Length: 133
Image (cartoon, rainbow, N blue to C red; front, side, top):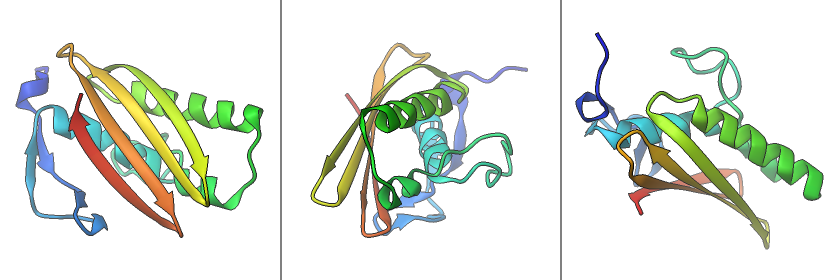
């Protein structure tokens, strides 16, 4: 049995206080987008549902970057997103400014709509914002 995007259900792990179980039920596209966010924020092997996944973007804060390293990060983020079921395509931009790193993913899901996943990294913390575009 294959689920349709609209049939997905899960518990959100992104609330107003940052990552962590919220107890809030989420449905449909939000489930797929949060799965991408979890993959971006988790070290490889930490996701119990996908031990071969994860990229840990928090490491971006503790390293220096040039055009090549940012291109490698972008490619890794796209690969992680596109490996999530129900994601057809992903484009990522990375912005560095004043010790703040902003990642914006434009996720095209199987429903034909694009959803924005923005993660702002500052002082070892991640702020996640999810919305339709």
